[in-house]
Amino acid sequence: MKNKEEKIAIKQIEDDEWTHRKEVLEIMQKYEIPISKKYELQFHIIGKTISASCYVIGWFMPFYFAGSLESGNVCEYFHMKHYFNELGITEHDTILYEMGIKEKEHEVYFLEQIKNHKLLKKKKKVFSWGTHKSANNVDLDEKLPVDSSDIYCKK
Image (tube, rainbow, N blue to C red; front, top):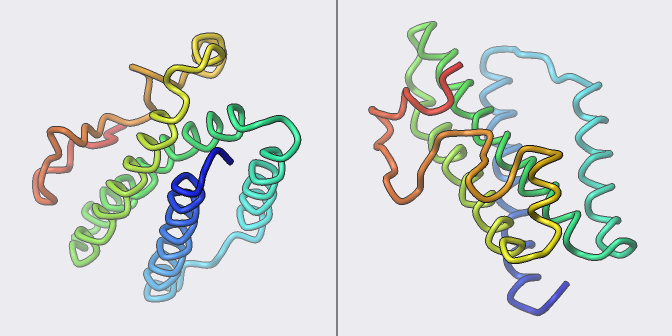
C-alpha cells in the first residue's frame, strides 16, 4: 500500500464490514433467516483474493474491484430495507440506511484512489464501474434522509 494513511483507511473499511456483518446477522437471527454457506464461502474467497492480489499485481486492480464490489453492496442494504418495508417492518430502516451510506463512502474512497490511473478508462468500458458509472443512485453530496430514501436502488 502507498502509505500509512491508506493502510488506516483500508483497516477502517474492513472494520466497517465486520460491523455490518454483525448487524446483518443479528437481523437475520431475529427473523430466523438461515445463513447461506454458499455465499459465506463465495464472499470469503472474493475477499481473500482481492486482499492477496495486492501483493502480486499491484494496487490498481484490487482497488478497482473492491470499489466495484462496494458499489453493488450499497444496494444490498437498501434492497433489504425495501423488502422489510413491504412487510410493514420499519424498525431496521435506520441501520440499513446507515450501512448503505457507509458502503457508498467505501465506493467513493476506492474510486478517489484510482480516478487518475491510466487503466481506469479501459476497465470502466469492460466492467461498467468507475467515474460516472455506479451500481447505485446514492449521491453523498445530496444525501436523502432515511424516511425519504426509498428511491435509492429501486429495481
